[in-house]
Image (cartoon, rainbow, N blue to C red; front, side, top):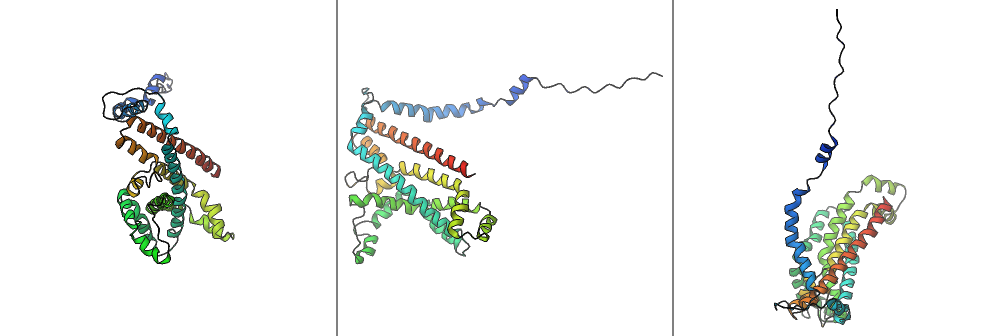
Amino acid sequence: MTITPLRRPRAAPATPPRTRRHRAAPPWWFAAPALVLFAFVVLIPSARGVYYAFTDWDGLSPGFSFVGLGNFGDVFDDPDARAAIGHTVLIAVAVTVVQNGVGLLLALGVNSIIRSRNVLRVLFFAPAVVTPIVTAYLWRNLLGPEGAVNALLGPFGLDRNWLGDPDLALWSIVAVIVWQFAGYSMVIFVAGLQSIPREVTEAAAIDGAGPVRRFWYVTRPLLAPAITINLMLSIIGGIKLFDQVWALTGGGPGHATDTLSTLIYKDAFTLGEFGYSIALAVVLTIIVAVASAGQYAVLSRKEAGIS
């Protein structure tokens, strides 16, 4: 009797390295149509716009001259432009601090166990869904010399020219923006508060921590992602602000409330200085990019340190 030796099953052939690389490679060409469209709609017009910042083009004439960095030099020599940069930064910082402070207080209030919390959330968030330009025209009537605000404060001798006084107009704009968007910040903070396990705060309370210590040492660190999002949205929105300023004061009285956005509009469509206005827009873009990158870097390091 002849015994046939058993054969070990052959192992499956290994996939050639070249085939594995081919399968793992991302199909970058799938994005080619979107990249081409993005280039035609965004990149090429943006690059062409930046080129006009180095010319004296008036927006209508077929010809123009190349002036180099002259427009950018004029930006920093122009006292109105320097004032507009200062107003832009002041509004952005004030809106970021006050809006998020009010939004956090509202979030802590409506996140507590009260029966009317859902109604309060809707009421506080309602102004954020109204178009900014509509809100601005509404408040322009309310803050006018014969408006409802002066009618209420007049008997106490506190009536003022809220939008016509150069010392008050800028802060009136900040108050309107905070009124409209504090509820927006509140919603983000509420989402962050509801992601914090209740057992954590209850354990801190059992250990004897009061409300302030529980917020500072327990709630605040766990709320860091929501704080980062709110601060970034607020600072970017404040720097780019145009609608409310234009509808409330048009940049006046004089240039007391002009921001970079309103000055860009005036120079381009009122004075016909397109080259100079595009140079202002480039400066605005650089400010937004630097502020966003710096804020993101600082807040990300703090979040990493907390975690």
